[in-house]
Image (cartoon, rainbow, N blue to C red; front, side, top):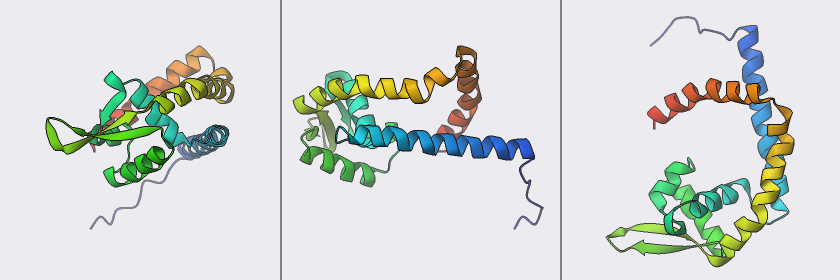
Amino acid sequence: MDTAEPRWLTSIEQRAWRTHLAAHKLLEHRLDRELQAFGLSVNDYEILVHLSESPEQRMRMSDLADATIQSRSRLSHQISRMEAADLVSRETCPDDRRGTFAVLTAHGWETIQKVAPHHVASVREHFIDLLTDDQLRELERAYAPVVEHLKSLR
């Protein structure tokens, strides 16, 4: 058991951490509220984006779970809700009977085409347009090692 004193956050570390948390939560909440006007959640939208950008607008459920950082169980429930709204369907993998594809439906494609311009405008208004290009590049540089580290733990 480690009995060493914890490495408490310095003042600048604590401010940076808390600012990150507040920005993330507030932005996600705002974007989710705006997507609700279209009957979607942020999670619904993310799934529609991944499927719309995939070959044949389909992904294996396991790959979609990894891409959206969700457990397979949680994704399965999410896909069930989206199936009920006719946004996606499930298809059995022809080469692997245990595998399942999530597939974008025609209604799902129409929905992402309708919603995407509004969502991008919201992302610009509440995030992108508030920062300079230099700040955006620095943000990307700052987060890249965090993302790589956390991906390596999966």
